[in-house]
Length: 194
Image (tube, rainbow, N blue to C red; front, top):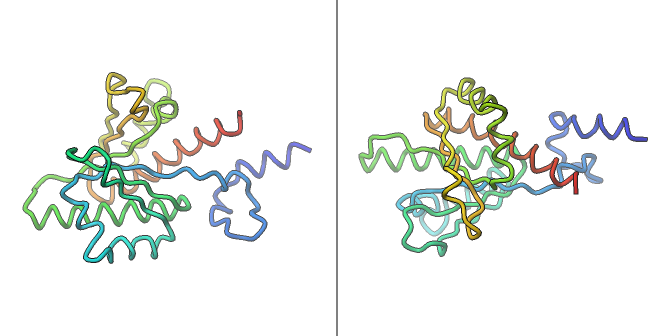
């Protein structure tokens, strides 16, 4: 019967922790990692001495964090992929933002470090929403300024748009939760439609 199924799918919040054996919620099994761009000068601080900082992040948040150092070697930014539960992902993201800000403060870089999230172009429209409503709502609720890279920057090699979030570490971390909620929802709907 389909109705109970529907109820189950909509009700992620209570079961987000879904570690129970037998995995009560199917949708939770879909791995939708967070991909962010990190300025190359902060990569060392995120990894830490002998990898201790990154180990600490992954342990505390039960996540897997891949820093793609080899990608675009001369680039000013490196992609970082975080695999975890939605909560773990957000926690790891917050920790990385805090490390970058601390590092920036120590190197006297006055400006706030923006959070840059990479998202597949096919999902971005639903994040933006009709007439930009979803995005405006997230900006308003989190006190951030969000911009999205233009379609011109897309290529076959790069199907991802860059979502740049500006604000305090706290505000950016809160915005990440909402942005990923929308992207994850769009991704799960696409998976279910297949």
